[in-house]
Image (tube, rainbow, N blue to C red; front, side, top):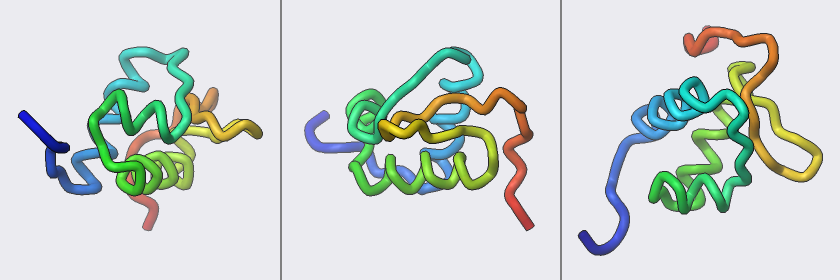
Length: 78
């Protein structure tokens, strides 16, 4: 398949969350996440930012995302 798969933002969020659950020590930058999950950089940025806003991920000073130690649920903020 050439090009990138077209998926929704929520599907990208779910895909990324599952990977972080399966690999708790995963630590990726936006660019690495984009390559790993074959997502446009803007989609990877939006998904990672959303997971960070929900408290599921935290962003390091160097711009990498890793699983939050507090382990919150993935429910959407009201």
